[in-house]
Length: 386
Image 1: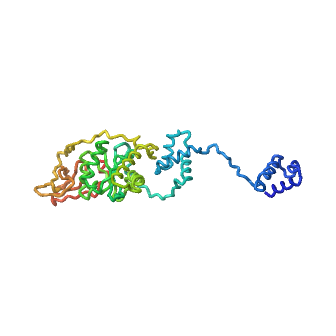
Image 2: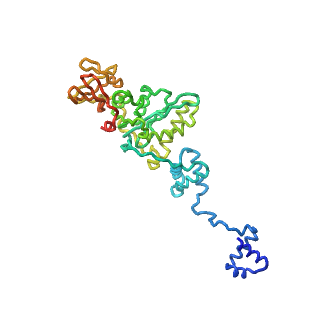
Image 3: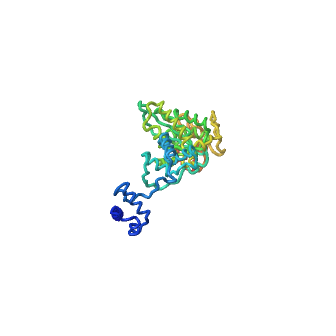
């Protein structure tokens, strides 16, 4: 800066351009440049200027940036990967910027934040690793209850396909979550999508009980329909992680804040299900929406329960009566209220001891000398998969 000031001062004192160029070891063009800048801007013109290009050839055009902002406005819960997938459909793959560019646009406009670094827990065995096709395993649970703004209690019952993540059902229940309320919802789902091979749930009612085999009226009905019962370990919701992740998205989209009435809340659930299945790209599906992957089951719902399969000839069979008991040598033996009206099988294992089964599900053991039934501790994965 001081050298440039000195050069200009000498020029103003009458020193010629050629002499200045020779004295400072510069070209005549450079000398003229500094003289012109001084005459245009004064001393400020002699400072260093940025050498960055005024226009970058790969800079994002205004039109594409506006597309990103418009998409974000219409889908406020979508992140950069999903927005980019939708943007590609609008402007084509060649014009579509990278995911990092979309993220930068969102951050620049205050629409996203850099994710915090999280410490990850030690991974456990993936219980849904066998979900290799549609309808192999459905996942079901209740999203925690909340109240709509008019005070109505709402408990969403959700069902999803473990492979495609397709949300089969999101039905708000008005406080009642027992067998008689839940069964009609599942009937409607079965009629529409057919039957899965298995249904995975937690260990709470109405999906399970503390009784023999953990059976409830609902799970007994599933077994009669030929559906295998799977349960996560108590206190391990991560074993139903795909479904739990969907619940988090459901809450953000429909219950934060809750709607004004129960009817409007159900409408929000229906709208969410439509977007989640048909529009929202899913990273685990290669940014495809679940509807592009899911197909209904070929196993249709029977309006009448099929007959129970017979047990082997060497087994004993008993009908569970109204009090949840079976008769054995004229004595009443308590079995399970969930099995009232069902036939159970007793497989001989030792002198006076029997293994109890309902269909193919092991329930426990029966000792005819004490007339007591001892249940299995929990439903094991090996038992579920036969």
